[in-house]
Length: 284
Image 1 (tube, rainbow, N blue to C red):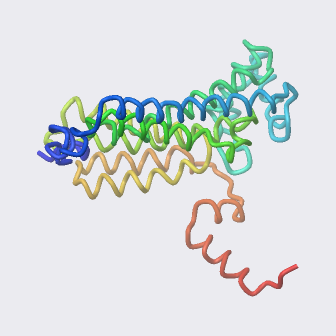
Image 2: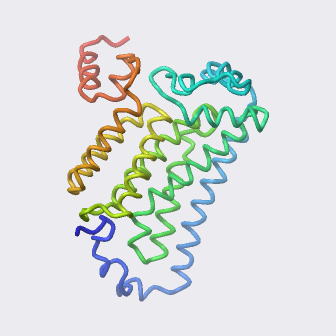
Image 3: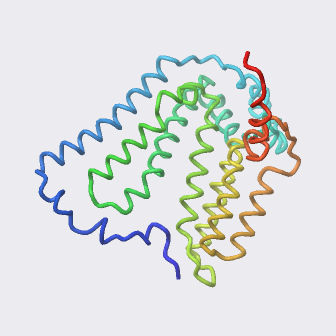
């Protein structure tokens, strides 16, 4: 049986007794380092909240107006499955629509609920990104440091549009669910026959990847990554087939493609061709 990836790390080097350099450091200095890194994470959170508060406006903007008829039909009890799955441009935004309906149905449609979901999704994403390091390192400085840097990365003001525009909830959650799916599949084993634990891992992987696909079309990218990981780790053939089948069924049936947006976003070959075709263009 092959151990999960995280368990294959040489824990003796990571979780054993502190090395001589760390052991010789004064406690107050190490404590100061922990406080410093924690302060970095808290500062990133405070700054993100400040940006959201300053930019907040209750009035829907841009693409959100296109979703308001769906929200109204749903709250009036007239929406059907096809409406939930209908594409928004090239995206199927099922989970975003669920949250739109909740926002307008329970919170007056002011967007605050959606902004809170964006913030919470970003923080959870940071925790998952830091998990591999936190899982194998025993040094609190490294643990707190990686978590704080991950939080600073996902809440960076460079992503101000995602932080401040309530419609973007799916743009944040696609990353959260995709990373969660990749993290989940690393927990699978090659045990035969497949045990209950691995069936649970597969279910979590499929659910997370489907959630990513139903948050934003970028989520399609996670499926070939999952299939490749499953093949490299020599997981059960039925696991690989399940990933391929569910990944295809989650988006492609009945999908309409805009070649320009789909090609650049999801097909590296077409994206490369697009770049190459523009190399000879004259500068304005």
